[in-house]
Image 1 (spheres, helix red, strand yellow):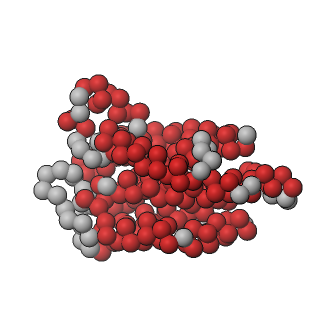
Image 2: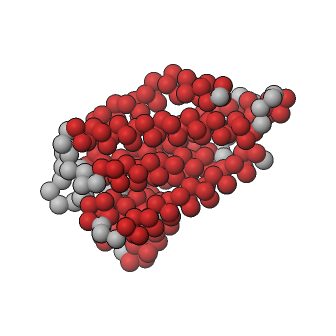
Length: 228
């Protein structure tokens, strides 16, 4: 697991990553609870946006490796491309899972009304996997880490707006409301609404199932392009 350990060291060595992984989640915990909308405290409702930023920051390391020719040198090393990719993704996953646990634990300690903390944790973790896979697929399109990050920031804003994170989806025109279902953020918003108001467990399973399908799709796209 040398690559796994090295990936963790690289992540925590970057001060900007530390801000996204520690300071921002801490600040999110202490954001107030809304009167009407969203249904969860502000820090938890918008946590999905932070997860997307974290995903693109973490997977940016793979773009950096490609820039430095690390991926090409793997052909001469006793490490397969699959091992390289798997151990990096494992490191990213461990970090986002820890961040999700920290957020939920902090909310419980701070006495936020999270309704079903355990189910909200599961939703956040599943969405984190989707965010990492999406970021992997996105970064596979770019050869420059900074360019990828800057463009993806615009994509995050669009996904948050059309996915029901920045505003209630009912406020969107009918065409955009129907289009919203293609965004993973839509299913995150639906999941958070279910945690607060849902009764049918099948709906929660469907939401997480769709997010996992997105995860698999983006992993396949990102992996194929990276192997290529």
